[in-house]
Length: 456
Image 1: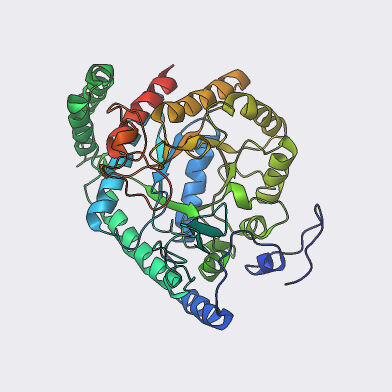
Image 2 (image 1 turned 60 degrees about the vertical axis):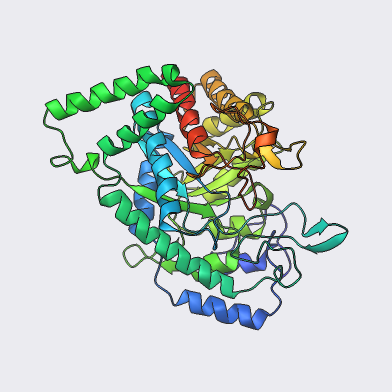
């Protein structure tokens, strides 16, 4: 690999391969580069998973979020699985996100832009390259795109063929998502019926009943005015976008295409891609790759991020100040969010960057329970979101959205919520391969809580 450029050095013209001249964090140690190169060449010949025009439409939708005219709801699995892949699982995740979106749209009075962590979320960064169990050390599990979770030497060897499997599963998932969102499953009346069912069976039913009744009255009023799914397609179908952390750069490069209409390059693995907290080095490979693709992009921003770093990221990733191009996803922890976020909000606003600000309340609030399982508490998740709203209220900026790890399955991975899950419950249905997720009931519970913040 070529010598690394010095920090702040002027950047050379971009191509889909210029990231290879820079330091790349969190990349798998592939055992055979020739096999990897052959696999990536095969992937580069496959059709795109998404299209440049769809990515441009998401940028426009996110531009409205940046202007305070919409709210971003981004959610899905911490890491998708090859083994747990099914139509039912995809449907249930989508169902939860649609329910949350209806609650948020009504409360905020603005559209909810719906983006899933789905159809590509197969790779995970790790804090250590080695996992040790019982005195035995093996390469860490890095997601099904790279290796297998089984704790054996053979399972932990990175396998390039998994990149191809990730592509095919993503294509199948996208096919189902398009059918569900355009074929009547997302009908507004149907989604609200699901929400009513949740409210009736919720331990906090009275808390949510008023909002559910208000949504119901609004729907009846629209129908009385002749606005029904047969006459207004927007009530019958929704726009739903895909996203993932673009961690394995060889895969992302292989799915990058030049748009025939504009001549610009797009990463056609997803509509939106983001850079994680561990890979956002200004002069590293991920920022270099991201600066050249036309997709809307995100960056996770943790408590160690300085105002200078964030401003430089804005300049590198969105020098043209295009609204909706850049989303800053804050993940600071419930105790740090308000004080940590306010200087960043002030600096970015003063510099004139039209970013989308969204809150990831999950990653800064993870801990190990007495049972030994990694978990998060619902109260801390909600606490970080409230601190996020408080910081924006203090600075006069728009709290643009939330970014959560969730599933439609009845798992027991996060503590608290309306069901008041405790440590002893974690072992009942703890199914996540990496990080703990909100279950369907906790996710909709969170949507009602965020709705109350939006209304206030």
